[in-house]
Amino acid sequence: MESTAAITILLPTTLLSTILIALLLNRFYIHKGSSAPYNLPPGPWKLPIIGNLHQLIGEHPHRRLRTLANTYGPILHLKLGENNLIVITSAELVREVFKTHDLKFASRPKLALGKIIMYDSADFGLAPYGKVWSQLRKICTVELLSPKRVKSFGFIREEEGRNLVEKIRAAAGSPVNLSKLIRNSVNTGVARAVFGKDNPHQEIFLLAVKKMFKYASGFELMDIFPSWSFLAEITGSAAGMRKVHRQLDAIVTEIIDEHEAKNSEEEDDVKDDLVDVLLRLKKAGQLDFFLTMENIKAVILDLFLAGTESSSVTLQWVMTELIRHPEIMQKAQHEIRNVLHGKRKIEDGDIPNLPYLNQIIKETLRLHTTGPLLFPRLCQESVELAGYTVPVESQIVINAWAIMRDPIYWEDPESFRPERFDESATDFRAANFEFIPFGGGRRVCPGIQFAVASIGCLLAHLLFYFDWDLPQGKRPQELDIEEEYGLTLSRKNDLCLITTYC
Ligand code: HEM
Image (cartoon, rainbow, N blue to C red; front, side):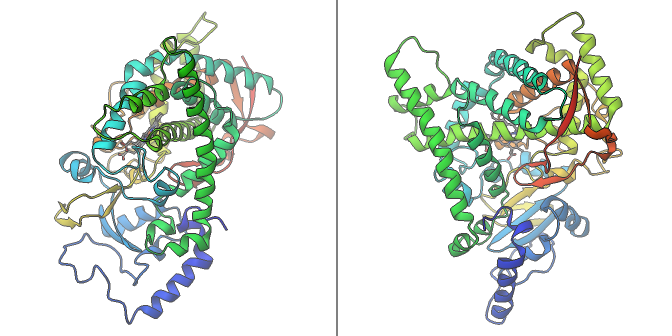
């Protein structure tokens, strides 16, 4: 069996036997943390060996952790197998993590997927804090993700918007699988920006991405019991990850080979994309560290994976909420059809003139937090937080989903109300620590502008050219909002809708 998020899936076999072993060993086992002189944050009682693993069963982790935080408070200590896990569930403490102690929390835990899939964390999303991380991040920001570069990709967004419209028109009359079309469009947009052309192996790639994001939940047994490597083999997780690695490696190797061949043929005449830049830097050898081919492959995958999944998941939730709230859909269509009045084509430069569209994207990111627990951090040295000690090497998880639904910060938090973001108020950056869809501090998502620009442009195309409805005369509130948990919180079921071309 291939394991996905261990907490929700693995229970019947491995976990129950683990509990039995734990109980048998109870008499002989001395709890690692129990004799430590730490003033640890509060948390529920812990079983030997598995710690609090059993308390996370039955619900998706972000929901379960919110329930635990309601009992134990906004800073919570759990023992998950071999790891100390500190869970933060308040904007005030997020400020401490992202601002006051930013450096101490700027690393990432070593996850099995980094080791197996991402060339031993040779990328920068999973890399530990340090020189390699900071230089790779800087190169990608300058070459791909800076506001200037993002603006320069406007023509790609326009073309992908038009392609999406054509594909939907071609399918008119029968329900269209909008989820699939969105995933393909977003992935093509990212591929063209990162390596200059479409992804020829899109189908295989998107399936591999889906699996990879499940492995990235941080709750894989291999990550909870890193020294029990046999568990990964028994459950099939390790084999599953190796398969994903082989598939992704084949794709990225082909991309690099093509770039190397092209560069040797047309030395001066070629317009550099990110892959060219990375290959050139490798050849020149002028960085402060030795840039390996693994670094290059892992960075391409980083951007390709992070860029595709999160933006496409967000756009699917946007359309879900607009279907469930026809009056908001109409208001958004009214805005865009008014602003573009008389124009036949949407241009990338039109998107900033659509403030309501922007409010809708923000409200979607609040209510359907793409990364509900952000991405785990590793505490690099012991820190005092809210009067408690966070031990060095603890993993830190911020329950962004719970904070962005907390009635302390948000009025009527369960309702979808884009108007709550007035045009001037909250920004995407974590200046406001109750609105943190992109994380914060040094490891804040570097792809904010890229993501917002591509989601905005595709969404504008969907709303300008089409009216949308549910198939089989279903009513708006009947559209399901079932979630699938992984690193991202996606729709469990694909979104299939009926369209009318306007
Ligand atoms: C709606 C879209 C997106 C959302 C919600 C999102 C969210 C996030 C979050 C929550 C993190 C972790 C931040 C932290 O630890 O504080 C992150 C990291 C990251 N994101 Fe995004 N992201 C999105 C789009 C993108 C895009 C389009 C790209 C690139 C093309 C990208 C590249 C990355 C990378 C490379 C990291 C790791 C940064 C590091 O560890 O230094 N993301 N993202």
